[in-house]
Amino acid sequence: MKIQDNDKQIFNLTLAKFIGFYQVMDTEKVTFLGRHNVRYKIFVFLIVYECLIAAILLLNCLYYSENNTTEFIRYTGFVVNMFYASYKMYIVLKRTKDIWDCLSITQFDFTSYDHRDRRIILDLWRNRSIWFTNTFVVFSLIMLIFYTACPLAFNDTFIVMKSRDGLSSNYRLNMVNLYLFVPEEVYNTYFNIFYIIETFGICIFVLFTVVFDTIVMTLCLALSCQLHMNFAAFESVGHTSVVDFPNNNIDNKMKLPYENINGIAMYNNLKTIIIDHQNVLKKYDEFLSIFKPIMLLEIFVLSYSIIILWFIFLTNFIVGEYTDSKGVASMQTCFAIPFCIIQMFMSCYVFDILHNKKDSMTFALYSCNWTEFDMKCKKLILLTMVMNNAHHQKLQYTRTRIINLEIFYQTMRIN
Image 1: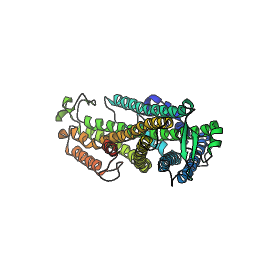
Image 2: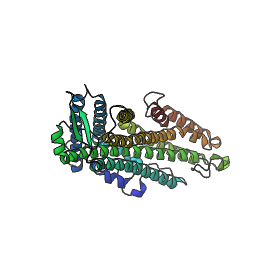
Image 3: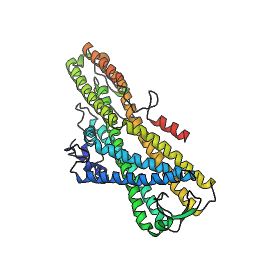
Image 4: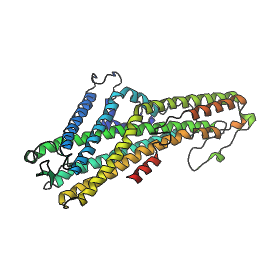
């Protein structure tokens, strides 16, 4: 993929450069650790750093597993999320060439068939993609700033931790109240150093999350756009015009009479659109081959995280005496729950759009002026319907459990 004009891409190029994933896409060399791209190696270092922090927290998790169930669950949740974020970034780096090739779907000229509202549709989806990705990044940055500022704003607040021998230790409030494997005297004395280490770790976690989810949202919306283009193209065949906006419908189009239809021209138009549609489905399959296992796991991890956050929030009020430190911890938890919900909603929503656009293609074929076509064109339309119906690839756990808004609502009801 070559980006020559930012205004002709369903792609938030400014954001991609800001968060760094555009610069790291070096398609010249395909090895994982042997690349000469400096930014690529920086991301590799960040993955190692994040995994190291997660491993240390895992030791703390095992330490608290016997006598402090609340802390054990808290540490488990964060360790799972940190390892998962590192895994997502690892996949992005490992499959860089495939992802960059898949991003060619964002080009305005990916499909060749032209019709009246082509540029309007493309601009509409480009604006949607920019809005979605910018909104998600803004939410992520707000959460990061809030968590970074909490230890500085409440610098006289201490968290009481019970050790395995039953003794209590008082640690200064930090970003997520997860403490490295050090005594309280050392931690409180060198708090600024530990604060920098923890802040760096949380910033990396947010960066990995933003990079991965931005790529997924961009590809989902770009695929939806190209499917919409194919829908409008199929729908326009045999009509004098095509109208693609919700305020209009198929009844507003004028069908060409039989004597005005050029059978050869219609056949060639159909072939061009079918080739475009096959190319889009090819990118669709490539997209699922890269991201399907990770996205299925993401829904599980986010659901697990929301459950843990609610558990932590409730135990702050139920277990033990309510203190100022628990109040601050509850406030931090209240801030994290909406972020996880928004992240899950946006992921389910973009896939819901993608699946609906894919499923609507048969209706587009019915909407063309096929009754006035010759038998050769009718057979081609029928074969296209068969091809489209035979393509069952979706992001799904089972045949009936598809990643869409329905599974989001079901998950929220369970949580």
